[in-house]
Image 1: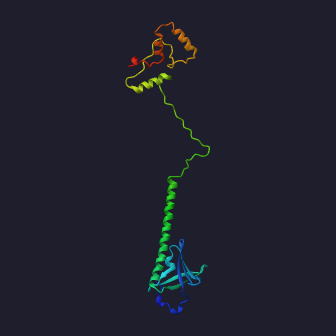
Image 2 (image 1 turned 90 degrees about the vertical axis):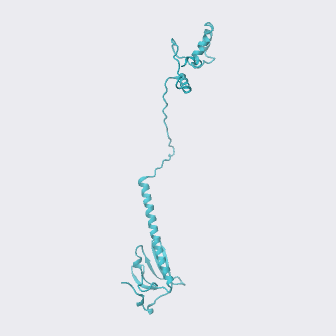
Image 3 (image 1 turned 120 degrees about the vertical axis):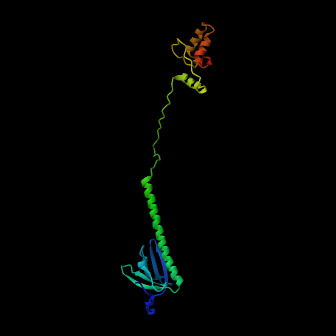
Amino acid sequence: GGYKCGEWLQSDKIWSGRLRVVSCKDRCEIRLEDPNSAELFAACFIYPGQRESSVEPALDSSRYFVLKIEDGNGKHAFIGLGFNERNEAFDFNVALSDHDKYVSRENEKEASEKNATDSLIGIHPAVNHRLKEGETIRINIQPKPSSGTGMLSAAALSGAVLKPNTLCLAPLPAGSGKIRSPLPPPPNDPAAARMTSTSQGVGQRAPTENTRQTDPLTNFSQLE
């Protein structure tokens, strides 16, 4: 049912010295050392989940324990350990508990990081959207279709912006063979010179007709 330190004999005492509790990641080591030379007398290794089988408290005193010591070659033995003061035994227990809490926190941290990594890989895979060297992006923009052609269409759209409900272009005069450009011809154009010479024999109404045909938006009286 357990060990009782009252059954141990004082004459069976084989060693006294310094005890150190060392945490080595998930393993805890209880080292019994010489206080002067730090020579190791024995060591007890506590692996995760095996504290009760490595360190067992005595049934009849809180200052005494039984340690499972190993020689590193697979052989082990059980020895009794006692502290002179109750506070020292309490600190020994606290050190072992702190190691257990540390291992538990580290395991939970690793598990949470692994779950977070798996969720990111499964749901939101990392994709590199950066352009590689030499890559370019080409964007095709379709032009907006418009009714009519040339400058007349632009003039009609400009007039529609001013009064979209009432403005519209008047129909072209009857008998006109083709639409002339609203822009005046360049001064060095031979055709412009011929038109000027011809207009001299027409009369005074020729400039008015030329102005009307050149710019259909000059006189807004025809627009309703």
